[in-house]
Amino acid sequence: MTAPAYSGYFEPLPRILAADDFDHGPSGWLDLRPNFVRPGFAVHDDIVDLQHWGSVMISSATFPFAGSHGSATGTYSLRLATRSPAAAADQPPAGGSMSLAIKRLSRPAEARLLRVEALFAYTTDQDRPGFAIDAMRAFGLMIDLQDDDHRFMPGIRYVNATDGVPRRQWQFYSRTDSDDAAWNYGRPGWHRAGIDPQWFGMRQPDGSTAATTWFDGEPQPLIYNETDDKINWMPLSLTIDLAERRYAGFRCGPRSYTFPDGAGPTLADPYENIGQLINPVFFVEADTDRRVNLYLDSVLISYARENDQ
Image (cartoon, rainbow, N blue to C red):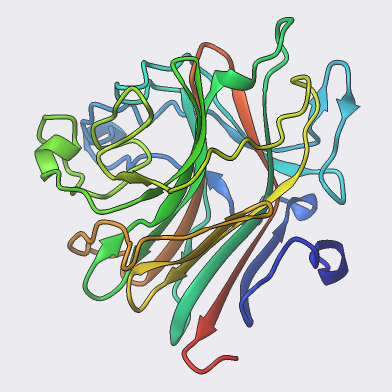
């Protein structure tokens, strides 16, 4: 990644943790999969099917009529593509209705602020005539973090449509009042409340969940363009205060969002063997029987120490 090509979109903190341009390969981003730890390499028993999410791949963003879009300044982007029909908006995500990409990192010494920035685009597969802007339910960015005392997952989610009703509004992951059983949709589970909010926590028809809060203000319609085979690259930036375990900033395109004072995600007890992890996760979710796609041209992850200017 070269600074001149991206200087108009990215505003990194002083120290670069990762600069991923997908013209050079996956750069450590891969499918988010369950833990195959039970007898016969079976996964944990969950009400949510974690095995059949859609694929993550390197893509030239090629479409039947438009040809190859390429990326913002090159040929390849990272594509997250769903593969199966969605459940209703107030139900747990159906197997295959989401696609998730994760990068597994660790916390650098004395890090105080963490920022994840990306150039993204989204569209629905052009597999039939018409205009499918409302086929996508949601997409977003979550960061799986653990320090000495807590595991927590701040993030933002763009609710595009629910059961065909346009929404076009941003949420952030916030503290939940659910206990562990309610978090796992009313049955015993190994996930603690607040962990993996992209698919756990009771859901509502309008796109609300047990661990999301809507930003104040009007909806933010993004650039979908006028047909399913045209994409536009847009920037987003999320900043987290690691020391305070709270949000420090969010921007999408020209619009900046304000968090309520002290806003942060649910703080869960720490898990074994994952201390000091930093795992950013991008995700996309379908709203219908159509395949939907999130494209990432590039991702820049940066941080600041207490005394950095």
